[in-house]
Image 1 (cartoon, rainbow, N blue to C red):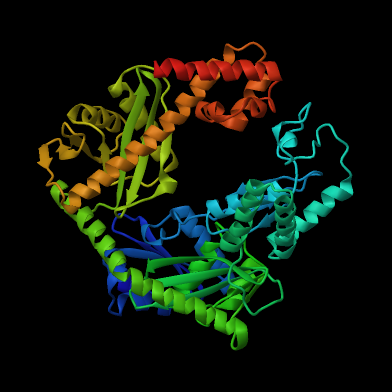
Image 2: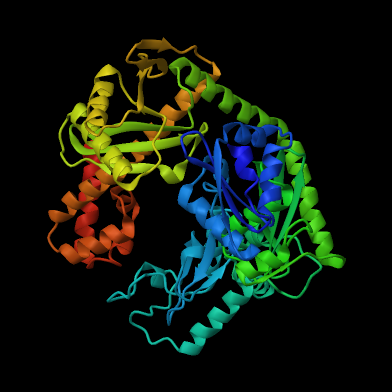
Length: 589
């Protein structure tokens, strides 16, 4: 059927959708010539992940478009819509922190993730290699430049004013030109000009030393060291101050190693690297990777790519300059990124192979023990409560043996009651009624944390919905370690230290930690709210402000009276602080 269908495919650009025997879309790709690309899957020999894909293809569809740009846009949208299992390589990829200098009359410095989702005009600088580095920069600038720290203006100066890190904008008439000068210097620094800040620090160090304030001078010296260690990155030869990302790659035929330099202000501010299984040809795979990469990052003014990438296609797609440098400094930078990509693959190859083999073998062993034809998607559930209160459930998803964090779901149970079966009944119904209603992908296996009792409740709900999904439970020993897999036909013992044992333990830990963290969030908010309700002077509005700013009761306990008084009147803040401290004393006793 597939080979006959191939003869009807035109030699035109478009997208193709590979399906398994159940009609589920398992891979989406694009091609300049659909006929040639599809023929390459069925008339060529393959290895690795491509061989696995081809072995599962039972049918395909294709969509013809008028241009390659349209095919790339369609491909990305189809991947987002169908989330095919062989296209999930980037969906859990990390997002990098940025520093935001807000556009307010008196700006604030913030650390933000998901910067690409911001719709309003804003000033963003980065990406930074990690949150630690970004926080160091923000702390440094807040120390040197007394900008506003509070989200809303208070009725009187807060603690930051008294320690010299704010000019008291809430009560003082600060000249706007003074604010603008600070903004200008901060922007210059964040764009790569460190001289203003380092000179300012050196001047302050000299002043404090001359005044014999050696502890203060040492503290400032440490800040200067932070700039040298964290902020001053490798200087490059291109001094045009254009923000650009530089991509390089290396492939061994089965894996594609991608390396990206983030160049900001003529300096390498950071880098990113990832190794992914190679399914498509190298050029298509790298083009798709770059297009998806900017789903979670801000695209700079210029992107440099290797020659296998269609730069014109990406330029049309991004509406920014995407170039393939052929000589000079920029070509050397792309080559340097490629050398790093090769080194990453060489250094991590054994680990990548070992982890993939362990995961695939463990998933196959689980499939065989349960007698299943396929085991692509597993959904696991766990419950948590505190003496029947703050009742929640969590669901985690593993696809092809790996956690799919975007698919995780939290459930706040409607009834606060110590009833594990009732909780399981509610969460299974809510989840799989939604799966039916929205025609979501069904799992091949549901695993519940418990034995036959929990499984029977889950099966009862699934039967009422007319859904036939395989069920299993996990049984623990007296040390809370996974001991056996529970099925309706009996228990399947799991050998400790086997790949399957570690695989199940990993899934069990993942769903447990995810659920417990959600339970702690809910519980903290509940405790927080009950405490606030009993304190005179805290009404609905102040309660909302406190919840919004501090989130959890543990965060509140860490705050000083001065900090709490940035939200509350001083007497009310003092009362709240005393109550929180007394709760801690009661726990200790």
